Length: 103
Image (cartoon, rainbow, N blue to C red; front, side, top):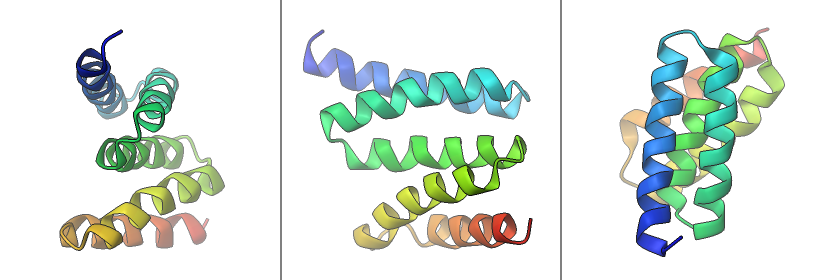
């Protein structure tokens, strides 16, 4: 697959994972999101890694897998904090991590 195609496919998979999460199809969201995350990591696309990690964090939270949710959330938070641009997302992720730790 060409690099541009892989990048587009990463975005498509990430969006599909998010749609499945919002529909409550958490196992599908996790499987699709995991595939998107692996592809984003292979391509070293940090923003894509962060966005898919956030979807996976919310998915794991919904499945009551709180430790796994924290790992994914922290991965997203690391990118958001380093970028210095994603203030809303930083607050959102910190709130999610706090909720996970309370369970």
